[in-house]
Image 1 (tube, rainbow, N blue to C red):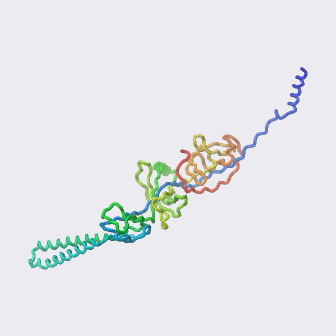
Image 2 (image 1 turned 45 degrees about the vertical axis):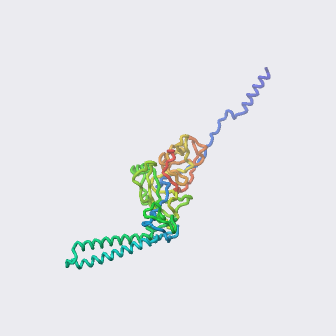
Image 3 (image 1 turned 180 degrees about the vertical axis):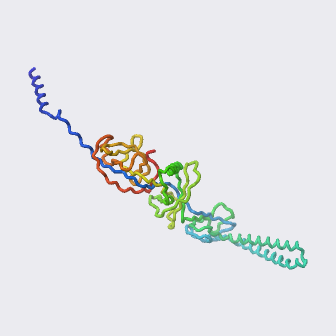
Length: 377
């Protein structure tokens, strides 16, 4: 029994010597964070749309008369000029027809000329003279037909452009009105780019412009930049020509057409490209760094800001297009808000923080900018 009392006394003595259990604990320091103070500035909104190049003019060369090809007078893949001869069809039968028509015309013309002097003296009747004049006119028409057919034995280029491969060789028989073309000529400078824009995006844009939320892009609205299949930028800017007035029922999109200068034939018909078009200007655009934006379990974006009391506050936001590491925030933030960019793992809403300003880099507009709102995905 004495041993138990001693043990309890020893424990009480040790507890009295250890003052840490009863002393108040020091408060943990506020976590350090870095933030960016948001500024508003005019931001040009653009959209990047996929499309394909198309020749401004395309001409399929076909024969107007039947015959055997004697020679081809162009180099496949070269540039030809309008009016340049491309093929020679055997003209022998057409030359003979022309010569015959010419002789018939000369005979009829001589007869009508002779009768003209005789009709006044009643040496020939008026009816005979009229028949001679009619025969002369018919002979003239036959002569013109023969001349045109003879001319058609020389096949000329209808437009200036690049000509492709020939579908016939010397010795091939071609016929008037055949469905197979002899060759195809494409005019490549300038060249068209046809892209498709969602009708929903167009409606949203027009509504924002009508409500004054966005301003027109002005002169830049017609300018178009092009990204090629390999990801490189086409050096020459294009111009928006027109948009279709109907919506494709199958895709729900509207076709837009732009034209680009193509002096070096870099762009060829059928190439897949991306066209970037300026659509509108947000005069009070708010750009937030990408690293500051988080998403909840529903995929909705939010940020942490430092309020006037150095307390963390959570803000739900909606975002628009991205610009070189910065998201355009369409709602939820205002100029002057301090958005936390570093130290996010150490903070929670309502907590005190020790914040310091981080200098934000000047954003540059991303060439692959789209009007897609990631908060809606």
